[in-house]
Image 1 (tube, rainbow, N blue to C red):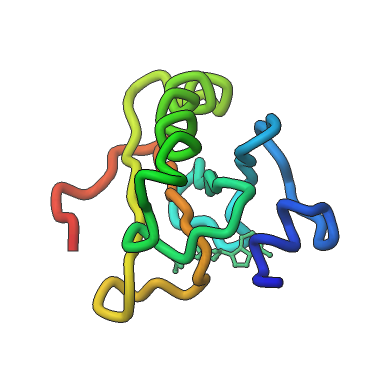
Image 2: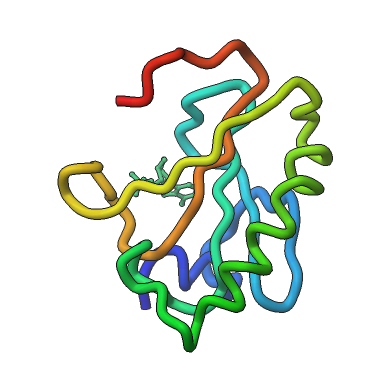
Length: 111
Ligand code: AMP
């Protein structure tokens, strides 16, 4: 089982900010901004490249939850949502996740 599958299963503790039947949001252990939340599907999807017609409903649901997760995290002045996919993007955990970042003026650059 991968690291985020273990977090989703509760085998490894996390600082949860939102959870329902299919997704989980928790604080990043090494925050890159005052607010840095990771949002994951509970099912194992390795990366953006693993999204298919069979599993995309959970991804749609995850996106539908972003506004309320952001609001609950106090991101009233905007935020950034990022997903690293593969080695060029420095993906380090092979389980689809979205970085929800904010709580300060973020940089204009994306790279
Ligand atoms: P990425 O590099 O895009 O794959 O992002 C993986 C993220 O997972 C990094 O920002 C890490 O800080 C974060 N991370 C790794 N292990 C944990 C953990 N046990 N709990 C919370 N966040 C973690």
